[in-house]
Image 1 (spheres, helix red, strand yellow):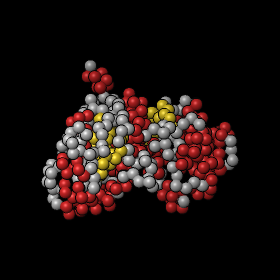
Image 2 (cartoon, helix red, strand yellow):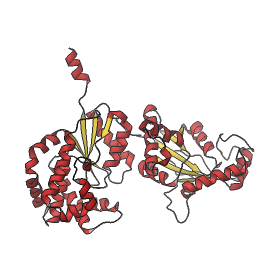
Image 3 (cartoon, helix red, strand yellow):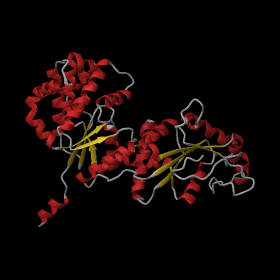
Length: 427
């Protein structure tokens, strides 16, 4: 009886392999999910950690070795050895995420020989299988131990190739040809049933893709969360010092049922969980990922929420990454007030407001404000608090929170802001 109980309740470790062409977000999706799962998951890391020859290859120029100087037998051996060594490493967590599964070895090798030897897709596939024949038994065993998920831009080879290449700063002819061949080979493997799960990411933002990833993977192990901020809309408030961000956040909380959260709290909470000592030294992209991670945890713990406000946006680059990650689930709102009014509102004096403005400007806060030179997508809304209303509503040294304005509140109110809901486009 005890043996049966142990068998039923203790789940075996599981390896999940994320495959797909370049720039489909494999590494990003793994990172988000692994961070969210904490000690329950680990990422196996890049393949070059598993083969000593990679150091010399990279030192001499990996692209040149891959496409020109390295004998194809050597390319095959280095790749196959890397994949197999990774598969043999013991688990360090209940769930292990792999960046590129075993089928990607065949796909990438076929695309490589196709480009180097000018072979059509079927002949390139045959050539790759021939090169991999000495490793076939071990590769079958390794592939059987993976749960395979492939991320594709779309079904069309030409469009998928275009999207992959669009993310690169520069593209050589041989790399472009390789990407096209790689898309062909991956589509062939999809048709052959080598991937248990297939996703088309299209133009969807990161968190929407992550939500589908979790829905697909959750049945594989109880430690994998089932959703990612599904149905939650986030209003992110930005602006210079004393521009009314806190009041707007409090209004959304008291009048529209938003949960009100501080971005500093979110960053620190996620950083503490991840063992990061100083999150503000991190790249803005990572800071945005920490914000989303903390939001994801908060929303799961408060599953009844569908609207959250966060304040205050720290800098332009992390805000741009938040927009990429959350897409239409995010509304970026910039609150504006004149320098004179903001100076009057500062509880520590006008110079304190000036000093804080300098810090915000250095972080790129003012770049969130629309201008003729910037895309209108950068900021979704601008709330302009008029001098007359601010002077009436907030006396000198008054509190920074309170009810947000409405034209019916007071005859002196000249605010250009009107109440909004998450689905409204009203400014």
